[in-house]
Length: 91
Image (cartoon, rainbow, N blue to C red):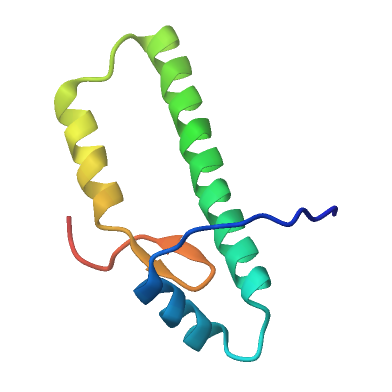
């Protein structure tokens, strides 16, 4: 995959932490991995939005209480290595 050199301005505290976590590994690779994860998250959310729009076209509007419930479920997801997962807390 082609690479392009860019200049970024990052929060100094976060950059220090990233450098500590990345260790001997490449800072560029760490940032590239973070961007990849961020883009994957937004692609997934866009796919969910498309799916919800399709459901609304086929079945009508989603009731507000259902949307509120779904928002609460998503907010309880806990990030772990390899991506988000559902919380073990009862909902």
